[in-house]
Image 1: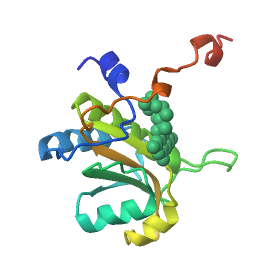
Image 2: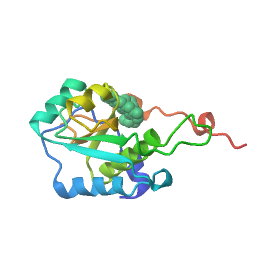
Image 3: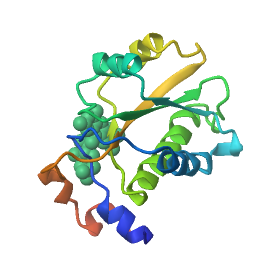
Image 4: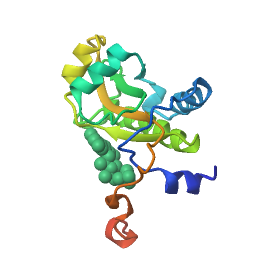
Length: 170
Ligand SMILES: Cc1cc2nc3c(=O)[nH]c(=O)nc-3n(C[C@H](O)[C@H](O)[C@H](O)COP(=O)(O)O)c2cc1C
């Protein structure tokens, strides 16, 4: 798909059918995550593919926002392997994991797979429930699947500020 179309077609899907995401498509999505740029090329992200009933139930316990997605990616990062920016206020962990997550989300759209980015959950509680290593923090969850019949973008998907409201040439 043309990049412009990928960006235009993507929307947050909030109702999935039971159709599974096949391995080849999932692998393309994960590969796009692997190729993401990270600060100092640290690649501190870790992506967990959740498809088992047991772990999907843990996702459902953490958030009401799985919406029936048959595959869920949990994007985490290694807190002990981040780059601290000059000034010492911020580091690369959340930023790098966000870049990876964005690659995953757009690659999903390119594969015709619907998705939704989730942050409505307690990341520490979920990390503990999934038995993630102590050094890893969860950034986000990405629902993956195919929209249920009749499901589509919410109205707010079409509401975007005009460029002059968010862009200044200085
Ligand atoms: C950082 C981020 C966090 C989000 N968290 C959730 C969430 O927890 N649950 C949910 O249903 N949607 C979540 N969304 C989806 C937004 O509600 C949705 O993207 C927004 O309404 C714009 O719609 P669109 O993505 O279809 O354009 C999140 C999106 C982003 C970018």
